[in-house]
Image (tube, rainbow, N blue to C red):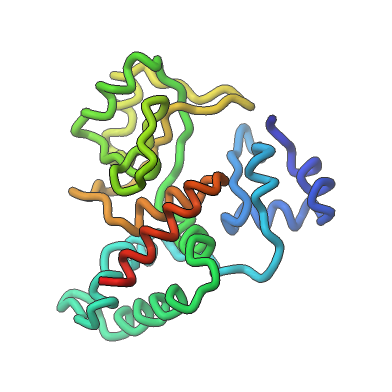
Length: 225
């Protein structure tokens, strides 16, 4: 069931302005349609009040965090990272280590990493869509999640290839209030391999307890190396 910002405000007993701020910060998941926010009931219900886990990083900083976090874990600064950026990276990693709920922190910090588009596809096409070399499987579709589903595809696609993927697979925007079976994260560039932290960020945006647990496990695996 889709809700408006007014309805979410009433359910959470907060102002509509606060709801809009939470949507902008990524603490409540929603989709803008014709300038209006649409929020699924499950996403509104998953909101946990409290202090902001972390303001979203810029797109550049988000991808830098995703790419270089393993270096911070090893304590090995890459030569192409400035001392200032290296210090910031290590500070963010320390926050991740100390966070009571790392999935919430990652979801907030990496909220601007890509533009998410929820779409509908012919279910019969999903198997072949997964094999399209223009996309990189992530989230619930990535093997590392342990949540492989035959009923949906979640993946990253470069901005240059987005239109052709949509056209070739006859994808359409998911109707309001319906569950999409294709979730595409549109990024400027496509990584050769989707890092575990990126998979975790995608899982952390979902309200399900299994997805949240899988996100925490993946973050823990990054921190452990």
